[in-house]
Length: 456
Ligand code: GLY
Ligand code: MN
Ligand code: MN
Image 1 (cartoon, rainbow, N blue to C red):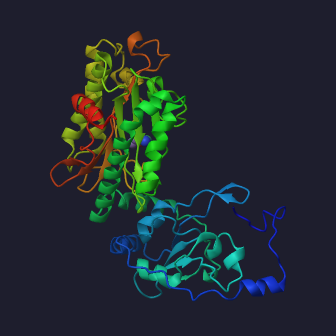
Image 2 (spheres, protein in one colour):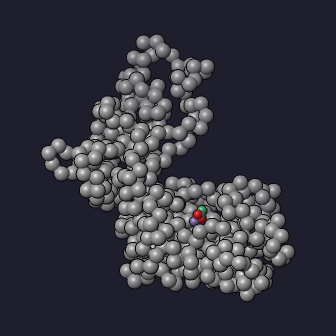
Image 3 (cartoon, helix red, strand yellow):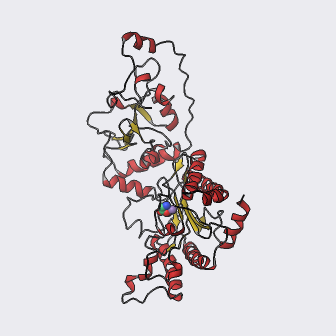
């Protein structure tokens, strides 16, 4: 593992003699260039940089990729660049700890000079090659250098050591710039929509890998971990990783909205709520939930709850088109939830309609934007997010649910411990919407048939 000299004086054993240094500095085969091509995101990222530059004339600012985050001592978490950095450079997995994208206003001219400052790799012949765990290629493998990053991104590159002293490499852009970036990210370009399609397709394939593992999950003492590990393994194989911690919630755990411990058993007769997303190599993620009967067949009661949630999801989807408010999607889902819970005699009488007491069973929102972040564009202004008007190219979730906690003394006893969420990823089109995740069955009969087909 890692061997950072500063943090590991207690166990470093590497010789420090000049003879060793000399020996390590020579007799390495000529260093082949890393083969690089212009990344597919490059022209889109160039257009985004130009738009951002236009929004902040005369302002100098920088967008850092972020640093490696320490897990403990000299052991770091796997690196993921900041989403704004990826948005503006097109650089995805593993690129590039410590990097910073600087927008320098041009003197006497419009626009900015934009430079990507990077830590160059330490190659054979450099002492850091074998002694620097962060940049040494003996430690981290062959890395692109400055010229290679320039070829990949089309952005001018310089060594981080040459960053002007007046620029703080770690400084986040100001609030106004972060909000502007979030608002730019609302509408996805064609490249982003394709990445999201790929993420959704990979996620659907992950759900298909989970179903045949259900017997193993039932037999295991922590069957939820069998579900999680199956999906997460798939995400590592087919994409970069999961886009957020997988929620594999069986039985009453399905009523815990962000159940990510996944330490529970998976029992026949219960429901399994699986909320999971593959993040692809470009770092776009899907976010899909299906609630499955563990033994392949919904009970009549489970089905009744499920059908209310499905009707709410369908009602929300049906109104999506350019020009409506984002909030209206939520309200359309809530209308169904309120009506059906009232008919069932579950929603209590209320003095003030604003109290919306039926929300006891669905305390979360119905939708959030989706993209490089699972909860994308979160730094946008409320009037442009919740109150904002839909435009073609926006991508968001529709994810109503009903959650009857085990200890909920208001809920009918037979419903306690039942949780259902159905979550799909939606793109707004010119005249309506497309459900990107429609290929993953959601109708209860289709879910049962699909599970039967996939069962081992
Ligand atoms: N998986 C978190 C969410 O659905 O928002
Ligand atoms: Mn979601
Ligand atoms: Mn989700």
